[in-house]
Image (tube, rainbow, N blue to C red; front, side):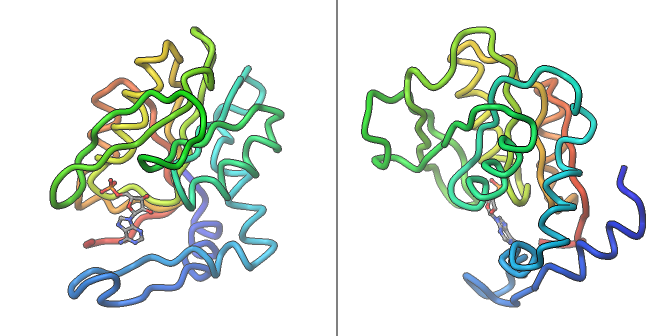
Length: 182
Ligand code: AMP
């Protein structure tokens, strides 16, 4: 749980763009939060707060906004950073997994040597909606022998059930703020 003041401040720092990328979607644009030094720092500090002081080997960020947040979090907790990328972007040998989008399937990839079996990894992205993307990331990391400590997001869209989907995989989920609807 985050404090009401923090929640208010973070919500105020996020811009909502109606009907983007398609009609009916309220796009939660975190670039305004990233551009606000105080909000950015608070968000990064709070994202992995419950695991501060524990051993975290790696932070895995999901392309693309998860790279910005995950990189900052990794620096903060003195962990390595792993990019989880869309298909075809990583140059070395890869492991891939299909994951569900709102309509259809896509694939995400990780370098095959990005994780050593048994490493303790936290997944970071900006927002969890249906949870399909995060589920793919968790499964990919587990397939490689990682111990997934948690999945952390600034924004939860609870009506879409994604956080519950990840908790059902026995992965603790941390979200800082939530918006109704989708
Ligand atoms: P999902 O797989 O449905 O949980 O979708 C999560 C991914 O899609 C994240 O990487 C988000 O950045 C992006 N996303 C989904 N819905 C939104 C939204 N309403 N506003 C901004 N980003 C979104």
